[in-house]
Image 1 (cartoon, rainbow, N blue to C red):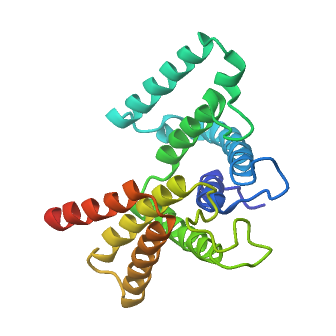
Image 2: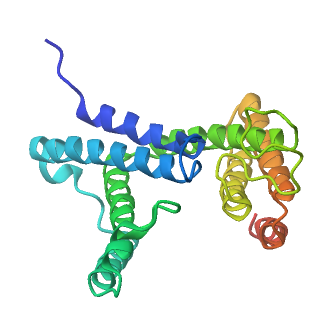
Length: 236
């Protein structure tokens, strides 16, 4: 009987999360936010159970690296929790609202995801694969946003709108998501030793995601891309 490789299963689950920005629950009050958070929470809770089993089997070798970033995020999570329990509206501080699905409960899942990912994605190649999947998902979100310029009835937000919001549901949040992936694509484009096809892919991600930022019509985000390009050029 073949042994179950928990590490690989958890990695697979982490990679799946890169597609969560594409989740839309069209029949719900908040189609772009509610579904994403519900799917993310569920997936993280499954990964957390598997990760605990992995820790029991493998011990300290799968503890997350205790870097300054780890402690900063951990202490911020604890501070968030403290202010939640001393809030004038505990329920909303803990669970957030159905529209945004924020609150400490959701943030605790983000912290757990950070811990699991930093402990299980132990090689540079693991993180590169996660980034590549994220770049592919961002392209799909951008193309969905482009379709919002049409009158297709099956595209939520279509009707020739001035500001697209892709699969994220908010132009500013969508632009931020595009910016992160655009610059990840740009950095990998200049990575030495990559193939021509990889260069085409990374270049396409940057151009398409940057164009999506322009169509989102958020001035701060457009300015961010311009300033980011200037800084990138100076650092490069």
